[in-house]
Image (tube, rainbow over all chains, first blue to last red; front, side, top):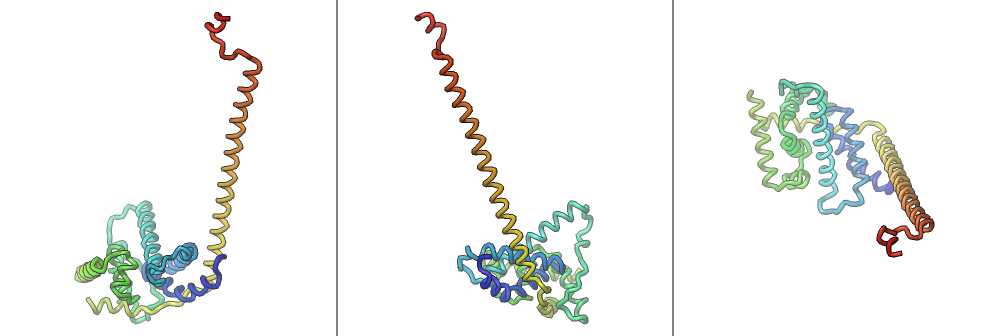
Length: 167
Length: 84
């Protein structure tokens, strides 16, 4: 391997973050583990070409979010091929998040289901803001958008969530 | 709305699964091995194509030489033979 020590350090620093982002995004333990492995393979391959135009943290978040978007896209295509979807409500999945205490499980699960109904970029922006606590500027760098675009993305996400909760 | 979203903040960070780093290392090594194999396969195919091309060109050249040796007036036409 090219840089075993540096890669090891990188994993120690960001492994937990990447795993948790994929877990929140994909809401499936096996898929999150698989995605984390693939993301670190990508990081390993691309680290030499890292231009330092953004911070390492933002760069890793970008790879993670893009990978999650790809996984969701291919999963949707697979589902469409396998089943003719009649109802969008069927998208709700039962996911027992290991990071949620028992008393909160039902409430959090409901919010996560509402979140899954949002368009992928809105969902990503909201997760990065609320769970990871990233600033608007950082989210803009991760999603490769302007700060204004992120602002409107977040406000649209909140409006859509509100609509769904009022249904 | 804020209250609902604040539910998400209650999600605690989860520890990574056991042996995840080892699995990543295995995946990296496996993919590198596959990539090396593909490079070798590509090189072998390129060399094979080059040899085949070379043999075809060589065959043509050989045929041309032997033709010109067996037929000294290989380009003779009716007119040419008339002049003779």
